[in-house]
Image (cartoon, rainbow, N blue to C red; front, top):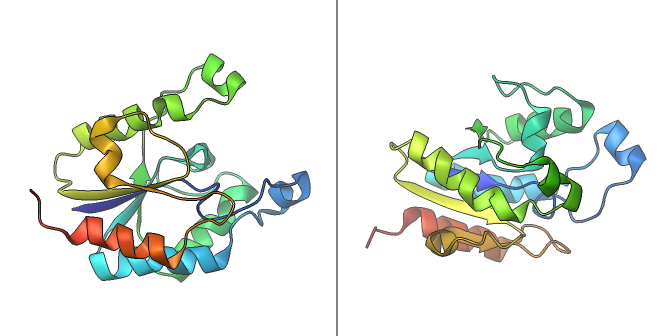
Length: 164
C-alpha cells in the first residue's frame, strides 16, 4: 500500500485564510488538488490527512464543517482516495503555542505502526517534522507557493523508488 501523508495549509492553499473564507469553505486551491492527483493517480497512493483539517472529518471521512466540504468534493472530483487520518497527539499547550510540528512526525510514525501493510509513503508538509527517519520521505513544501510540479515529481520518485 502506498500513502501520501497530506498537510493542507501551505500545501493545497497558500494564504492565511480570512474568517469569510473559513465560513464559506473556500480554503482549497483546486489547481493544487489537480497537482496532488499527479501523485496519487500514477502511483495508486491514497491520502492520509495529517493536517489539523482531520478534525473537520468524521470517522468515515465525511465532512463535519463547511471548511472540509470543499476538500472532500475536490478530492472526489479528481478521484483521489481519502484513506484516513493520523491520530491526534496534540496537547492543549501545543495548540495554544501553535507548535504542531512538534508532534506531526510522531503522529505519522504511530499511523505507520498501526498500518504495517504500508510499503511506500511520502509526506507533503510545509513544516519541519523533527524526525530524522522521516526526512527521506518528506517533500517540504514552500507555504508561500504551495504544491508545485517539482514537488509532484519528487513525491512520485519517492513512492516509486526501490527500497534500499
